[in-house]
Length: 288
Image 1 (spheres, helix red, strand yellow):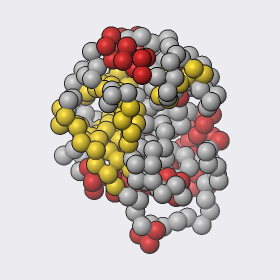
Image 2: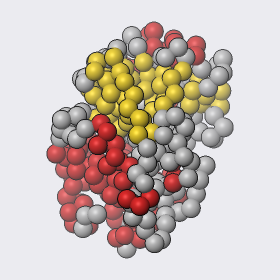
Image 3: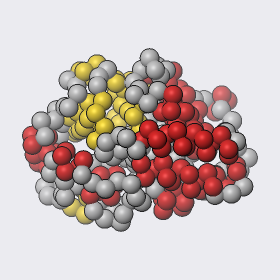
């Protein structure tokens, strides 16, 4: 990982880039869409082997870069360096773990303290988190978010108006977009996570119709097969952390979009244990 002085300089470069990006960042195909990474640095490197290296491949990462894995600092640093070097080829979205409350409690803060001896890097990263876009729009037809939809947001234009330069609140539109999940429900239903909502087929179909969307891409939920298409393939969950938390045994995936209506999942397994280094001291031992 970088020395503190160099990391601070990197953060300043990336902040200058992010402040000019929209809440709903437009992206042109071809592009590869990725789900949660959660500090699994070796598996992120495997992802780039499968999907291609920037700038040859354009990427959208749908949040949750940190927490739970051993190498959140290294994972985030790699993504920020790519964002600084290829700002138009790497789109980084905000997940529910890109917040002060969650990253303080679920590993990232402890890792920053362990590796740097102080919370300065964590504080700098939280400033970056506040500036991350909350959505990406591929060819104006495919919307990417971390979690899902909000009862307060009926159109993408309303999403563009959400104040984002702040900590994720406990409720409201910004909270819903990074916390909500699809489910077999008829109406908006409070989420068992304690934040966000469950939303079903009718809500997705109505939102897609109003906004001329063909597909919603999101992450936020572990799926054992790497991805899960729902609601007549109008929504897909993409998961990019194989063998999540080093114990789940799941496959991971990325989605390669040739254009908005042509996509292909690419599956990959976790890097074998004999090809990765496990630190002596683990980050916070928490799992849900």
